[in-house]
Every structure is written in structure tokens, then in C-alpha cells.
Image (cartoon, rainbow, N blue to C red; front, side, top):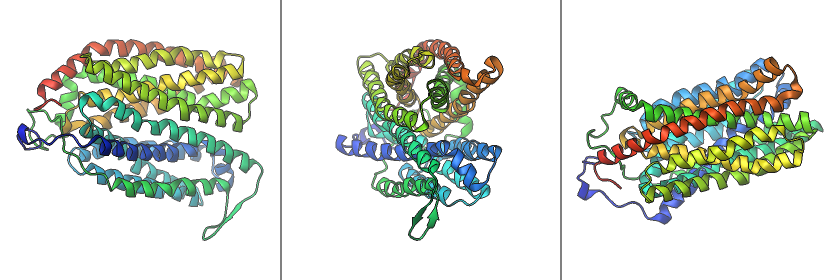
Length: 451
């Protein structure tokens, strides 16, 4: 039985044209999610100055306000995605985070800015569990990699746009002055940015409501309807801890490298090579916006082709291949004395980091039963967000301060952290392959009607 119906009544997959329309809508949502999330990190100094808040308060806005609610709410929202209309959940989430992003631009003090960032985190917690589940029901198993890869364009485009836009705002702010807007009156440039990037999200939310809720597929035959509890999910993961544990850990360590770069590469170019904030943000943002989509698409194509050839661990192999590109480049870039060469190599870095970013969630969807797909996805994003955001930037800072004791050694600290993380992630992903293959085969046996 699947969705309470016999196998013979299961409808075909939606038309490819419509399925790709859904991918584009979800990708646009991802662009604005990452843009709304990331832009604040690039405007710390002008916000502190104009709102009169301290470093400690700013750190709470950057970290606690967003991360706690984004990660913790992800799990109950993931459970909701397994039971309720995913299209509506995402549409409401987009509207919430867009309004709250605009509210950041209207903040007058620490308290209102903190609450607005909480709202952004609450809204964005809806996207990943629902998007992964939706894509898995719109595309057959052998085509999900490319679909998720195109969806993941949103990360590179969003991060790149935030980097470029943030750099321009910082340059504008440094020149002083305010902007007069109708209705809102006199505003600082950084406040205008929040209003500008928050408003289009409401259009994306409306577009999301045009998406049809698809038939739920890949339900395991041993579980009936929606009767899966969180205890069932925990038991399912625990019984397969080698697969899920190595998957979560490996991709989390990879995320440590990515977050370490996002937070500290600009400082390397500013402190070591004498670049301005505007120069770093423009070129780094351009590379993220171009290299990221190449990497995630490449991962999707490789994973799908390997899977269709009968290589069951194809998507995890794509993640491993990307890691093998990423790690040596991540170590080398901060150590290269020529700034132009170092920035050029960031193209390879962006491609390499994009591959596991797309392949990891795709691989997860190949082994997660539909009844618990949203919850398992939420646990995955909880783990990689906690470790990646928590340890990546911190590890570089501690290495710079406590090991080398010199702010100018930030490049050496970044390379050191990437070297340690790179060895670990490579070993864990190689270990994962055998267990992951077994889990794919097990899942395909349990699915009532394999796709």
C-alpha cells in the first residue's frame, strides 16, 4: 500500500515541464532565503554604529536570534511536512521571513532587531524539509540529483548577491549620508537594503501557492499512513546509525570548511593582500554566484548518471568527488602570496564545495522513507547547521588567537583548520559508501512500488 492506495492506483509522476517549474520556484525561494540570512553579516559595523548596540548584542543577533529558532523549529516543521500540505507550509514560511527581513530595516534598537531576526529564522526553517520532500515526489529516483542541484543554485546565487550587495552598502555607508524614502522617511543605506531584499520574497510566496501538492511516493510498506512518531524516526535512524551518522558527520565537517571561508576569507585578503572590502566582496560574490551553480549541477548530473548505471552510492560518490576538489584548494588559497591567483583558485573552491552541498541532501532523499523524510531532513540540517556555523568560524578565530597569536596569521589559521577538517571529511565519506549502498538497497526493497 502507498498513501492508502494500491500500487495499481498510484498516479504517474507530474509532467517534466511542470516539475521543473516547481524547481525554479523553490530555487528562487532558496535565493532569497540565503540572501536574507547572509546580508546581515556584511553590515555589522554600520548597524552597530547607527543603532548604538555592542559587539555582544550584535553577536546575539547574528547567531542566537536566527540559529536557535532555525535549527530547533526545523524538526517539528519537518514532522509537519510529513503530514500536511508542504506547498502551503513553504509559502507561509517565505512570507514570514520576507516580512521579518523588511522589519530588520525598520528596527530602532537591539530588541526590535533581535525579534526581527527570530522571525527570519522561524520562516526559513520551513524551506529545507519541505523542498527536499517535494522534489522527491516530483522526480523519479534517477532524476532527483539534477533537480536538487538546480534547486541548490539558490545558495550560490543568494550568497553571491549578498556579498556583492553588502560590499556596495558598506562603501556607501563609509561615505556617510542618509536616504529619503516615501512613507518611510529618512533611512540609513543598510535599512533600505533590508526593505529592498525583503519585498520580492512576497512575490515568491505568491508563486509558491501556484504549486500543486504532489502525490507522496517512496512510502515503506511496513508503515501505514501518517502514523510515524518521532520515536519511530529516532529508532529508524538509530538502527542505521553507521549510514546516517557518517552521512551527517561527513557533510557537517565539509560545512565547517565552507563557513570558515565565508566568514574569514575576506579578512585574509584584507589583512594579507591589502584589498578593500568592496574588492573582496565583488570578486568573491561573483565567484560564488557562478561557481556554486556549476558545482551543484555537476554533482546532480554525476550522481544521477552513476545511479542509472546501477551504482547505488552514486550521489555520495559525487559528494566525495567534490570534497577531493575542495580540500586541497581550501588549504592552498590562504597560503598563496599572489592575490589574483588565490582568488582565481576560488572558482575551483566554489565548484568543489557546491558538489557535496547538493549531493548530500539528494543522497539522503534516496534512503529516507516518505513518511519520515521531512523529519530526517530537518535532523540533517540541524546537525550540519550546528556544527558548521558553530565550529567553522570559531575554529579559525581560536587558531589565529591562541595558536599563532597574530591577527596577520589568519590565512595560516584558515589553511590549518581546512587541513584538519579535510582529512576528517574525506575519511568519513569513504567509510560511508559501503553502508550507504546497503541502505539504498534496503530502502528500495521496502518501498511498496519502486520508482
